[in-house]
Image (cartoon, rainbow over all chains, first blue to last red; front, side, top):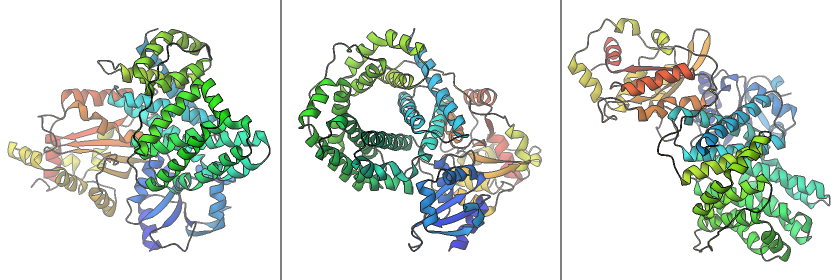
Length: 98
Length: 487
């Protein structure tokens, strides 16, 4: 399932990395993804989510640009902490997270 | 100063303020104070959009500005951590920490409020995991309020009251919206908040605060009426009339006026007219900030009460840097575009094109687009076309070295009753510019555009540098024919 979802995402955006976070044991229709891509630059949050939702999978996506991700990383946000607690890297490199 | 002129001026001032704040937020994260002010500016902008008697391109620029502001403040919500920590911070014995905690809660509440207002206008969406925390973590703020009351900390009853009424305001705004994801939870939270408010107004110190603080009293009354409406409770509120504004700071006067609008419109209108010059002069003397936002809100309320007979054309920041001539790239976007010029078209073929419905036209055009994965085109062609769709098709496309979002609004002949496409549909053509910074729009229409619509589009290409092209009628028929699609 993840592979198909990823292929669809990668066909639409130049993605740096994708992480599944939160409760990884949840069923496939209830997954949280963090998608980091500079393809999102200049696109509203609303539109980013709408575009990834057009893909035929049910998931909740947080779509950030690299600079937005760096911001949440450097300010030690609750979101970043919650991601680090439990995550699975679906695409990209682990180094992006540290 | 003429009120209409002041309105124009303040809209520009507030738009510029938001853009400057957002630009500086690229360098460093917005502070809590920045967020508070941005939210106030967004609420004023929302009210301005509610008035709405502006040309389509002005509305698009205001909505785009709203989107910038709302996305920036939303980024700072951080999973409603302010709600999460509220109970532990308020439970501490440090008065400063308690007050700071209430301020932070108010900022998060205002951010959610602007999010909901943006949702109502199709600029923002609701339902992400951050939004889940808005309803899941609010209970912790209620625990904090309970603690303050239990300890009888009268020193912070006033900010506590504001926090509670603000929460109610955002919950009612949500319940009045069309979203249903949190309806049950929000109703339960509002019932709980309402029962807390009922209890609070029986407390002697709160009664004293309400009787001495006109600003809070009016705010409370408006919100109480909204709560009862949201909870479907019938209750008549006593009418409010204010003969003159008390001698107080401009900010307080503006707060009273902006609330009075909801309680007694005639009273608001006459008091605003009476105080307009003084307030305007005071605002001119100060640096741009909260008073400008509250003033803009009042100006919008004033024009909602007394609308002008014609649209007001605004002078706004264009928000676009570079211009692209879209039609110069048609040969890279549409298969056989150059060859289509040599094709001849009969009257019957034009009638055939005009007879296509939206779905047929979309299907045929999607098969002629170059440089986009077929599966993506197919998905775009089939996607549901609800009110939240920005345009019929949106695909990423490369023109030279640059990537753009190509947005295609369609108008089939069946959709347009008149002989030509009227100017009134301009908003649908301009709308993609709200959500995409780097976008090109190709308007595809079976019937010809009216001269007014064409002139308007050309004016926007020049004035705002918007990359828009039109593929209409005969030119469209030729392109379909050369690709074997006109059948």
